[in-house]
Length: 262
Length: 321
Image (cartoon, rainbow over all chains, first blue to last red; front, top):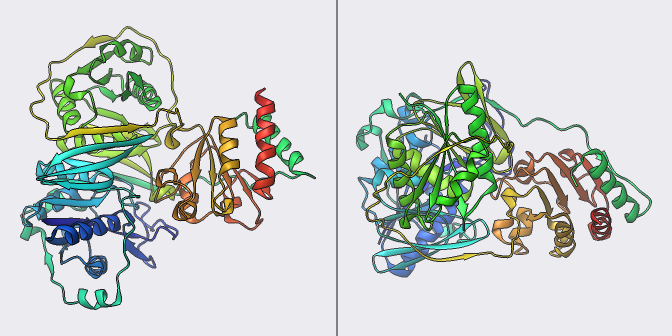
């Protein structure tokens, strides 16, 4: 089975995000970059499927030179090969542009199953997976916490509000991964050593036949006017009292009488 | 020329999700601001009877997409139905509720239209004749204000944010013919909680617990029950296996916007603070007076949650009689 995993490099979720001087992008200097946590689930699931059924796991990522660290991380976890799409004209793109490029890349890679995180924890779009599937004309199952492969079909347990829905689709299909699917492995030291020798192909937009005018900053449909920090709150008001009863009574009084929330 | 606003609603077993009223109400406000008409869309099987309800929230027209193939949500079928129904009169703006289903449908529909989609918006306003969509990114650490080039402009609105307004009027109800063809996916099973538990992303009040619970969420559950609130958890509580992943609030879990968020025994990791920062009022209860959570809270209590919460639950019960 040929499995392709789409991964994205994002700023570490434990770090602060700062707005760049242009006011419409984030500061990229001094940022710790990690593999999008939802994509780690996708890599792990791909490896488990390969371990159970055989096949190849190819990791595809779009971005500048530093993205290769993330691809190498996936290779160190056990993926077989990497494809890095790097082109200055692809920089500054939005979700539709990313999907356009990834879908073009997937036309050059054989696949039965595509896995990717349900959203990037940077822009929180949750659009690329479904948009890639739409462009390829294949079904997608979003927010999957359990994958079952049947003969020529895939069954995904999807997490929805208040429950789970089990949906089945014919292969090839795309699955977006949700927390709960698995616990991603760490790259082992031998894995890291081996990853250095694994094939990592670099492709440009021309290689993929993508018109540069339709992607990158030039092709954006989502035009950022401004980035802002969330409004700051007034200083915290501490609720005190002699006993837990007194504290509780005062808190309820404040929430009921002043804030009118309960 | 694309014209008009469309609000796509979501129903489960014949009942609209609350965010559907929010999306229709927001659609009404935008239609008024832009001097255009609002169309509400109902999708499902045997949902004809639901159309009239949406006129109360200001729809000029209700499109009922009623087909046995739409009985259960399957994104391909819903995308195809919506595409067919809107093809005759292409709208300028399409709104969805940013639920699991709404986000999935919005993403696939936008890709089919090759249109821009602002996901999980918390505000939409008109600026110099153009719509500006506000959407949190990085789990709420940053707010982006974006315009959308091309048409239609698509947005999914975050539950619990847009104001619901009753604006009754006469609405024309139309049932366009659909031809959905073969849909490749099948729904095998649905296991939906019938207990009436309040969904985190739609809850007005959330009581959340973290490492300070030591795994004992009973006092949090009891307070939540007294308040009619949903229960949330920090990432560390989820990582410890004390709560399900679906309860997690934060950048790698759910980003929530309740009117009241009560954080108990949560110190306040950056990614958790981001995920609940758009709550209207935040109460923090923590033993450690230096905990970062207090820097984001409106009201703070320094103390042992196991002593405070039971008393709080009693006081809430007494208040509610």
